View 1 (cartoon, rainbow, N blue to C red):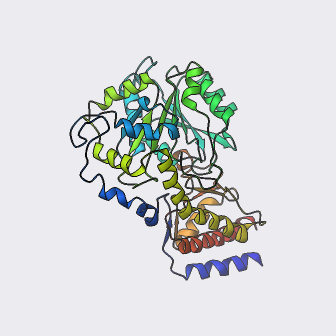
View 2: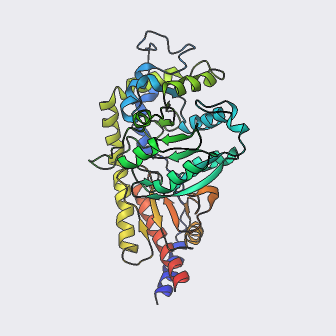
Amino acid sequence: MEIERARRDYEELRGKGLKLDLTRGKPSSAQLDLSAELLRLPGETHTAADGSDTRNYGGLQGLAELRALFSGVLQVPAGQLIVGGNSSLALMHDSIVYCLLGVPVGGERRWADEERVAFLCPVPGYDRHFALCERFGIELIPVPMTPEGPDMDEVERLVAADAGIKGIWCVPKYSNPDGVSYSAQTVARLAAMPTAAPDFRIFWDNAYAVHHLTDHPAEIADVLALAAEAGNPDRVFVYGSTSKVTLAGSGVSLFGSSPANVAWFLGFLGKGTIGADKVNQLRHVMFLRDEDGLRAHMLKHAELIRPKFEAVDRILSKELGGTGLATWSSPAGGYFISLEVPDGCAKEVVRKAAEAGIALTPAGATHPYGNDPADRTIRIAPTYPDLDELEVAISGLATCVRLVGAEKLG
């Protein structure tokens, strides 16, 4: 019987004494080695393009040459970008805090003074976005993802009727975890849709703007320009970083928006710092040089991680293809694969995998409050392990899916 074979395979898996970790989308050591030259920069030169000494105070908005380097890929004019530290999540955190404690551009009052603040959360989505809102008591409202991005009929219905909905989380290119890139129509509708809240914000986390896995990179529409054209110039907050481009713990982050929002953000930022780490900004300019240099660098990343994504697809196809027990995404970029198992099975699959020494992101993490109502989505993060370890882990995961499927579905 199938269930007996699945149980034998699982016991054999447990007997291997594995200790494998697929929990987070981290760059591998080999990827980090691609940026080793940063540790030797800037050398004896500490002067920015404008002649200023990067070792000193000042330069709150960040080096102009670094903002110019990322302007094109983030689709934000260089003058409307701010360079931060190594974490774009920190910029998202600060954006929410500034809205809570200060009146957003176009708003009527501080968010902290509102009776209720809610965010729309396309699901499956990024757990750290959800956790950030939970930290400040912001209500999370899930909306389903489609192959073209969030279900815009539902998004438009909700934001038009509810002034308490102040924002939406968006990972527009190679979304975490399903790899979807938003269609031009979806972006245009987000930019132009009527909202009951005058200070509604799109948190546009373009984390994977340059993280392509194929020779045909996804292109997304320019949401900032479209919002301005639609009469909503202050609607969009754009975020990006080099966390998975150079050194994850020592990179730079970027915030972009309308001129009014940039002035608003800098007004708060300047109360807490006289300037970011401009020496690190300079070394990034020297290392990446320009957009062509950035693209060439990311091709090296793709060469390292593409085989891992291909291995996941190959093993899942071999082990689970045609069984009716699973479907999975085949992303053209980004850092994750979304595995869908039968309803009611994801938590048990993750539990059995953990017992066998394979650590996965908790089931439910892809949904607000850690609750996937269907209990079917599992996020796979294939980039960090070595290829041989990854292959063992995915084969083991497939074994767990077969066992849970046989036990629950008969």
